[in-house]
Length: 342
Ligand code: NAI
Ligand code: ISE
Image 1 (cartoon, rainbow, N blue to C red):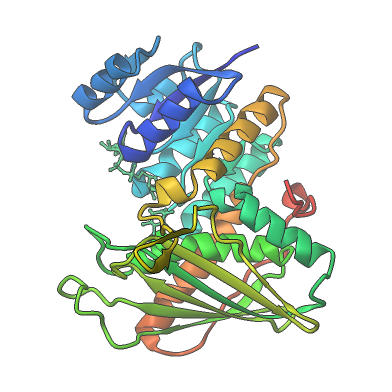
Image 2 (cartoon, rainbow, N blue to C red):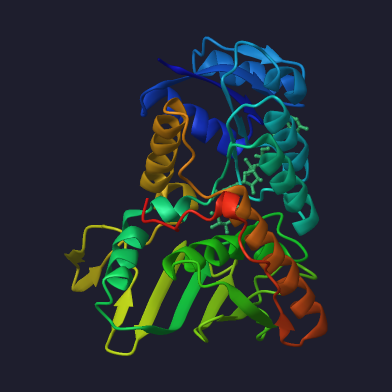
């Protein structure tokens, strides 16, 4: 059987996912697309030679009998509507982060999914599918560095065109908020603090950059994550875990060390698309395979909700300049399968 997929939002990442599903992965076909920019949607169908229909809107696509599963890659504020509609239609839906732009929106999705009675929603936290993060999680799960005490992380973008307000938190740091919780086997966060160091000269008017996010977990683990969205030199993701018997670092992506002209150098990626291309491919192949089996094994709507609660608290902590408590309810039985190394 081939999974017939409809894509809502044929912009930058929507096209990336359409390309991978069409040319790299197996088990699925893009049979429907839609975008408020209909011209763009038609161009994508033509360019990628898709056997796909262009729908006027997301609702029609979701409720079409020709669509088995939906991928939501439209703008964040539209995600809640489409995810709720997919649940209402009883169809599996992959929603790029964020699940919704507020914790309340995520809660509405959780309530709808639990009322439906079966998990249908996967959220696009692709770092859990990165081989480096999976290798790091194996080290932690086997307690090769003892019990984790501290994590020191960095999320650096070379530049951030169009970034404004709190996007360093709501658009970038969401990835660390999800993946670090997964690394620590669901040890949830209890407080957040946001520090605002000296601004870089390369931040656009009114944008604070960099930030430092400080998190504490229920077990007392202390986490610092630097977000620097105009670092100039490249796209650089770092994660070091300090345990009570040793340390473990997120492996650097494989690039060729070069020695020439009396210098030694290795390439640094400049874009998240290249740095995480394998993670995206694994994420979507596993989503296709699970969905064809009627299963949902990826980051759930509950994970999207926990990230939203934490993100909202970080935004508040930035506003108050204080350490703000993060209150995450007990995970409902419906979502409580152990966080596994997928
Ligand atoms: P984009 O602006 O390039 O594409 C979004 C597309 O959605 C646009 O073509 C727009 O016309 C369309 N759209 C907006 N509202 C719509 C509606 N109501 N119905 C149909 N189409 C609609 O944005 P981009 O960068 O592709 O981001 C899309 C989503 O993917 C965002 O939520 C973003 O956070 C997420 N994303 C995730 C990344 C990751 O690392 N997992 C990386 C980049 C983006
Ligand atoms: C972007 O939206 C993403 O989600 C990327 O994964 C992240 O690294 C980048 O900072 C965001 O702007």
